[in-house]
Length: 379
Ligand SMILES: [Zn+2]
Image (cartoon, rainbow, N blue to C red):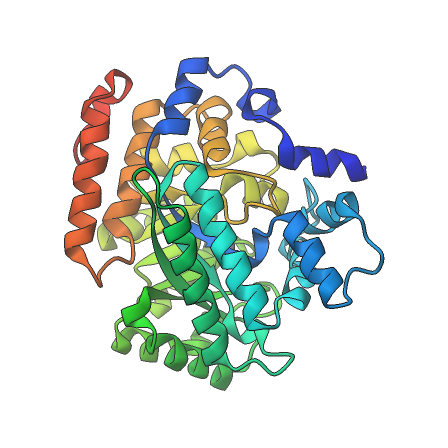
């Protein structure tokens, strides 16, 4: 079993069972197309070799070798529920309790997504999870800001990569602590931290309004608002998330069961940042092929496609696109519209000129690609 999971991390997309049947030229297009990813967690995306090195330096490795570390970092293919899947984050969070480790993994994650052809990425993490050994919220945020900045410089060749950050408040944390997170996060708005999110164990802490004060502080400060919803509790939990007036919802896929809710998402222009592989791992849907992404998209619900966690899900964004094409039956044009929509709703309100340039760049790519001819321009 150990080698099985570690191998999943190295497996080429050509041998991914969920991407079977994809034509080589379709896969090649997904590899080279510029991608925008809005839903990606720092602590779910560590390189196993780095995690092992950092764990050894900090006396947290318990004699592990690399295969065992990979096993610890990759979530089960199918967990009982969200709470079980979240256990894959315990070791990364234990390791990432100082500025040096946060900076390093942030830098490497930007390099990794840039290598996958991602042109714009939003990386999120919970600053209050990294203060157990004396790091302050502010110094922890500054460490991630420094890491993504140097990572973007390092990934500079070619078109490069644009990064924005989202501070995540935790459902399980005290409302006052989440207010502190919002306040500290807002200080970094000029440094590329442009969003605020709520995540964590949804069944145990179902009510996002407990953290209304943190959301309102973040909104007033100019941060884009998103919230995790629907990893437990179905469409009712997605509806409940609307109470914090989000611009986007992380996941939210069970909205498909409630036509009135889908209509409201359409009308209010609230985007679902969907992650089918992660949802399948969390046991929300019976299989990858059963994920409602195609039904949501064809019902006109605004949506984007992301990995959620590169390492926990042993996944790249290109692979998630390939799976959505092969196993969910989305057309290449539909996938391109999801990708482009990511730029439209990105938390890039700190630099609208940059958003316009990126959109123009994506459109230029599409107009030069015969396979995307049908998808050029706003849907
Ligand atoms: Zn997430």
